[in-house]
Length: 176
Figure 1 (cartoon, rainbow, N blue to C red):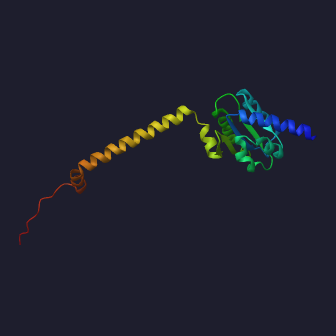
Figure 2 (spheres, rainbow, N blue to C red):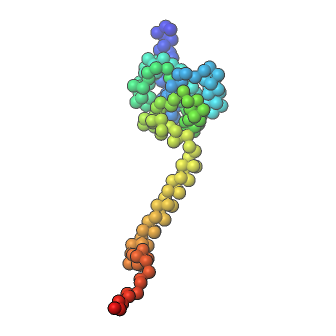
Figure 3 (cartoon, helix red, strand yellow):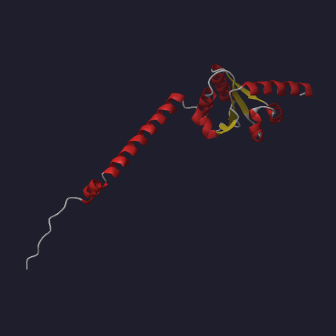
């Protein structure tokens, strides 16, 4: 590949990285062509770009973008997925589901809003915001209930202690 071609590819990637809402790096080593094409089709349906590039080009393209935060991870065969226009969770969801189906496929790292995302955070992004919100509300409700119980126990600690001690038994007098 000529230097001019490499510069053009790096510039194109850099522009995409700077516009992307989220960039996710994956390791595809061990996947067959059919599986990769299936993944590409699923991503394309959600308008997610899935790009293969040499690591040196990825490093060069990441300069002056948030992707530079993860340039140290550009080693070995990998692909970058970047979401340009739609929700941030769609690439995470598709890649997470694909990783469950294909054990050799690995989600490595990502970048969103200037923050590095580890694989677990990317997997958490794959859960719809509505579900995350519902879990958050459930946790808050549980916490409120627990606080109320503790407050009631605190106010009525003497009664609680009596209940735990069991019923009072009358004293027996000993007759000899």
